[in-house]
Length: 532
Image (cartoon, rainbow, N blue to C red; front, side):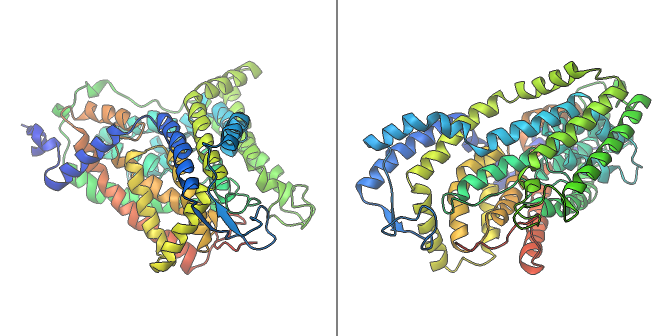
C-alpha cells in the first residue's frame, strides 16, 4: 500500500473541476497553433493582406514624433502603406535578405553563444552547477538548487537537461520527495528564466527585438543587452527565496512521503557524479581567469581615462563598453571555459575550442530559421506603418480609459503571461508583441527598457505551467521515472503555486523598484520616455 493515497488512484493524477478544464483548454489551444516558424510566415502573409485593406480605407493617425525629429512625416500624418502595391512588392523583393541579416538579435545572440558554447562543452558549467548543489548542506540544498537553476539560464539547455534530473536524484538521496527537487529546479530554470546575476544569451536576444520595436517610433533609440541587469540581479535573490519557500512550505508537504514503489525505474542504481579533483582545480583556475578578465575590463571603464568610456561625454552612458557588452559575454565565457577545459583535461588545443563553438552553432539551426521569418514580420510591420498606427490608437485608448499610470504594467505582465501559455518561446512571443506594446507604452511615457523588464516577468512566470514550453515533455519524462502514473495535469498542478507566487512577488518587486524607489532597471536605463 502506498504511503501517498493519491498514488493508489490513477485518476487523482489529474486535477478536478474547473482547473482540469482550464488545463485542457490551454493544451487544446496550444495544439491548434502551428509551429512558431509557420506562425510567423502566416503573420507576414496577414500583414501583406491587411496592409492592402488598411491603405484602401485610408487608415492613418497623427504623427506623434515632435517637430524636427528624424523621419517625421512632412504633413504630420502617418498613413498605412500597402505591401500589395507595386512599391510594396518591389520593397519585399529588395529587402528580404537585408531584413534578415540586419535583424539586431541575430548577430548578437550568435556571438554570445560562441563563448557560452566553450564554457558548456568544456564541462565548466556542468561542474559549476554540481559543485553548487552537491556541496550544499541539507539545510540549504533547496535554496542552492533554485539558485543553480536561475544562474544556469546563461546556457538554458544545461539547466533543463542536467540540473533538473540531478535535483530529483539529490532530493531522493536525502530521503525527500524527488518530485519536490524536480519542481524546485524547474522553477529556478524556467519560471525564473529572466533573472540572473550574469548577462547571458537571452539579454541581447530580447534587447535586439526591443530596439527594433522602439525604432518604429524613435529611429535613433538604442537598447543594449545590459539594460535590465540591475533588476535581474535583484530578481535572482527574490526568485531563490520564493522558490525555496514554495518548495518547502507548499509543494513538498502536498506531495507527502515518497514511496519508491511509485517509480518506473530502479532508483537504487542512480547516482549523481561528484565533482572530480581535476574539475575542482579547473573551476579554481577558471574563477581566477574570470577575476583577471574582470579587472582588465574594469580598467577600461572605471577610471576617467578609461578607453571604453563615451569619447564625447567621458561618461559610461552610451559608451563603447555598454554597446559592446556582447563581446564581453563572449570573452568572459570562452576564456574561463578553455582554462577549465585545459586544467580538467577536457580541452587540449584550439581545435577543441573550435569544435565546441561549432557544436554550439549547430544547435542554432531552428533559431536561425525562426529569426528569418521573425525579421520579415518586424520589417513588414515597420515599413507598412501598421506598428505605429496601432501603437498610437492603442495609447489613445489607454489614456481614454485612464490606464496610463504605473498599474498598466500589472495588466501588461498578465497579458504576457497569458500569451506565453500558448506561445512558449521567449523570442517568438516578444517578436510578435514588442512591435505593438513597445511603441504603445512609449507613447504614454514609458521607456523601452522598463517595458522589456516587465515583459520578462510575464514571459517567465507561466513557463512551468504551459505544455507548449519546449522542454515540458522532457520534464514530464523525468517526473514519470519517479511516479509512473503521473500526467500532464499533475505536473502543472504541482508547478502552479510557483507561477502564482512568482507573479505576485516579482510584479510587486517591479512596481516597488521602478515606481516607488525610482531605481533604474539597468545601467543607463531610463524609466520614462521623452520624445525628441
